Amino acid sequence: MGNIFKTLFILVFTTALLGCKEKKQTTEITALKVPDTLKWSERMMLSEMERNPEAWSLDFVEKPKWEYTHGLILLACQRLNAQYPNPKYDAYVKAWYNQMIDDSAHVKTYKQSVYNIDRVKPGNALIGLYNETKNEKYLKVIHLLREQLSGQPRTSEGGFWHKKVYPYQMWLDGLYMGEPFYAQYTNEFDSGESAQKAYDDIVLQFDLIQKHSKDSVTGLLYHGWDESKEQAWANKETGTSPHFWGRAMGWYMMALVDVLDYFPKEHPGYQRLVEYLNEESEVLLKYRDQGLWYQVLDQGGEEGNYLEASASSMFVYAFAKGANKGYLPEEFKNIANDSFQAMIKQFVTVDGDGIVNLNQVCGVAGLGGNPYRDGSYEYYVNELIRSNDPKGVGPFIMAALELDK
Image (cartoon, rainbow, N blue to C red; front, side, top):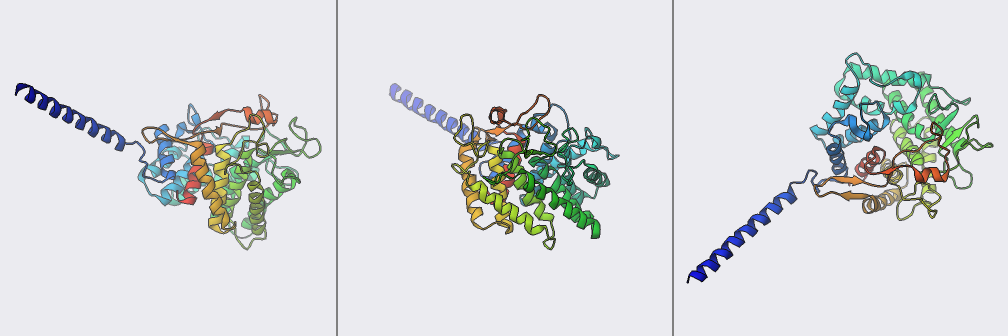
């Protein structure tokens, strides 16, 4: 009998232990930092907030900086909060702007005199913040950023230079950095003749890109154009850079759909912007591979080229929003949905604690500067590739919001 009781005791004790172990595992599984029951938009934003509890550290910076990448993520966060309200999102946006803008409306690390159009981008979310709070310091900075556009150096035809240190150069990137803010500001703060002139000026920026950067054979847009044709990267006849960089066209497509939010339909340039969006969307479909797009758009089979997450996210966002707003045919919503699913499969990984990662993002690419960036194929495919770069994360969140994913 003693052996029977001993055996029963061991069985009961072992079962109890297994039950505890099972219970502990269940607790660990449900206690995710980012619940997998949420939409991808929230999962990605909450993951970014876990990686960067303070927004100043976004974009891998070591100290606070007034930068377009922060403006991009915080604009995505602001839009997310509008669709799925959460006090955490609102607080995250406000904390960065209040850290960067003191009570006298001085903006830390911002210098208008350098005329870098990238520095205008944080103005979009700032307008949203001002509309919410009516804080006068925000309004003063909004006007300051608009003043930068008034003084921004231009090409002979009126195109904004990308930076003062990049004379006579228009980059596709710059259209997204400046024009959505310019359009939103004009829509909310200007009227009459001054508004008409501003809208004319905004359309002009897109007209000049179409005139000077569009390739007549492929229909794609070159990353940059140098009016002076003096840059080593510039074609001596056309002034264009050598290749079609995916994210550059992504910036351009996002610029179009965001500008149209604030652009009057009765303006003669409105329809041109819609046509540009449709033309480039059709062109991009020709270079879609497995639902996604390459770092160098037209060189899919070449050694070193890769499917790139930020450009793909940007195109999905532009297609989805374009279809939602009626700028693009409805079929682009289906295309966007298919491409989004391809992005999840190709680019997204989820850690054990629910943290979502966006992989295969080009860290940075530009033209000229020091060390000199020659715009060659080898340059683009050998630039840094990293996970969770805000230039991919921001558009991913916005694409997911448009698709309600």
